[in-house]
Image 1 (cartoon, each protein chain N blue to C red):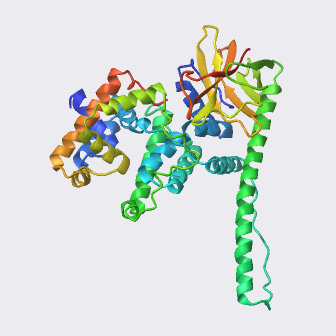
Image 2 (image 1 turned 90 degrees about the vertical axis):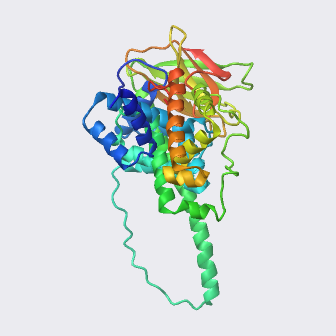
Length: 252
Length: 201
């Protein structure tokens, strides 16, 4: 097959519209370890799965995030099975059936609300525990340094402030912001670490709570160093380069 | 994050790979960072394919849980982390569509697409991200039928013959449209230098 034919075959294969014969050919080319086939497959993956990049982004509710993180954190901690051993004894009720049914329904609603609230609280607590562990890792280093981030008055009003605690040996950065106003709708805050050539490197997006507080962690590759840090607002999902207004900035 | 990435910083690329390594080491902070960065994209794909907010949120949860629990399946030589996530999202949506005979249900209403929810970005908020603009521009260079055929194949997981039925075109025409549409998209992305693995980081 020509390289062009392999490229086209891989596009159809990745798209999921290749017929049986084409699928067989694509799979045998990949199974053979042919580098050209693998390169064509990788490019086809990039091209085909770029299609949804054109959509306008929407965001799922916070509940999804909370439940996912709680589940993930729970999975990393060995927890003994928590099986209820209660053997219920059912007493005969003298109340009319409809009252029992209504009470049961009411109880179920209250229990559901409490369960959801409890899950959310547990998720937040679990994340706080992980954050505390991360804080210990950064702050516990004998090489730890701290820098202040000051607000840029033209953009951020009030008395927002931030600080970065970082360890140049373990390359960990911990950002804390205070009293930072919520970002404009459809935007998130993004941290930038800026090197001595003034090149900004994206260091993750974060959200502030109702009090304008947030804690954010980032780890950089060994051997890299930064002289400044800044926080901008960017489109949801973050941006590879800063495009929005600078809210806080400071020297490291 | 509790991982030691190697190499030098390249706009976004190492960032994603660092997060993937953290996830492989079961670091919840890495999962959180990955979720915060890519959950809008995964959710948007799921909304486009399933049309219901509840189902789309299930897909988001499933995709990121799979990323967490089966992180060893990710092979960085085959795709970038974001391409991998998009692939997972699309295939989970197609699975769900087929499993629930979604198309039947959709004709009965209760589609959430128009009411994307209170968490969606404001109406008309354009995604200014440079890469997204380039992809959008590349797609806009396809003619209408090519784009419809490509989108039906991508978002609905339809076969050539199903797309031919849907669009009322001959099978051969649809095959040509999809093939040419993909080639034109690839050429546009190549021209913009986005098919070297940098597109969806």
